[in-house]
Length: 465
Image: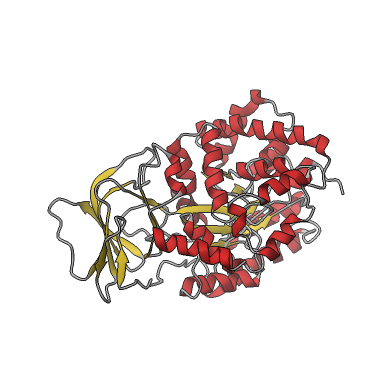
């Protein structure tokens, strides 16, 4: 089997969801349950039986609510239920009664939970959701959905399943499934009715069907996202879907010759169109490692991150795939594409194109949670500032959901009334992004998991193999 780089990379994608009962409402009202005894970040124990309030005391807050980095030093952050209710200087602050205390000692940093904006939650994904949480990923966008994802979304919402808040698309909408404008309209209306958050394009679609999909999406209030259709020009796409979910897709429609001379012009056009771009640099790195060689696949499978993957999934990943089945002689071209992504992403950043950090997790061998840390490292290597990388992985996701999915959603920042998805770190990630690799603790919709709890999550997943 031989696929071109364009076709093969085009196989990678994502989606995240709401059930029909919660269309465009979001998970903001879910009341989290708190343990009665919580170890604080320094290892001491504070008890508050029956408390629904948590206090992070003497922490440095990175709110991620502006277009520049700022730190609020020595703060008390009060969480009630699922939400941050107040942020105040520690000096002179009186703690409420029956509060669970997590001590920051004036040295730890409280930052927003991360979002992986491109995942594929395959069969049996429930047992892997804790991997996201253990690495600080508190929200995901699932980009190829079906009824089981709507069901899983509701089980996460109810607290039955521990996992990141999920937004999801429905099934792919492109040829051969969608051939006519009438079929495009029917697909968009059905997915909106069923409660999906996005409609996803994965491949070619006729210009007339594409235009009808965009128009109906605007009419019923569901955003069209996905790959850039390979048969349409970039100018056509810029007038349509709200996001491209693989940065490398821009190469096919905008930079097929990998010429850097036009980067600023095209980046300005993308910015002017208001189109969002999901980065997925780690995805292409993963593809390049495996392209035309089993050795690369085995190298990825031997990593510590892959050791958490259940045997059934490891067996599927270990088989020849759409990357290993290609010609090894094509790998240098994938490497050139990967090199081109760096100046391209810098040009997009300079043009203020809105970006989301995403990984294509679920594809061989992209491990939940761990892959987003790889993506963050790759974006830093590409030359983006640490603050811009954090923005792509935190506040931009909340902004995207508010603009296109749920105007009342509030996550991705550490601000009053934001959803309490938080990470406690030993240092400032704006100074050192590697602080994200091993958080002191993670709060998921108001429920606190200290380092020991996160380690237990990892051990449970590993033992489940």
